[in-house]
Amino acid sequence: MRWMLFLPAGIQFIVSGFMHTVFAKSTSSGIGWKTNGFQYELGFASWGLGIDRSIGDSRVIREVGR
Image (cartoon, rainbow, N blue to C red):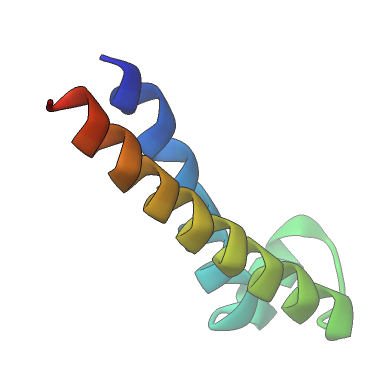
């Protein structure tokens, strides 16, 4: 049960990073911003947090499985 609370956060950060970098123009127009360097910075930071969170989640899953 514990891992089910952690896993969605990592996936959400990865999706957010993808949207802010790969689909930068459509995402920025959807939230009322102009595409600029800050959006890419936010996207790469989100990817980093998502990957970090997913690695941490995999450790939690292994611990719960013991």
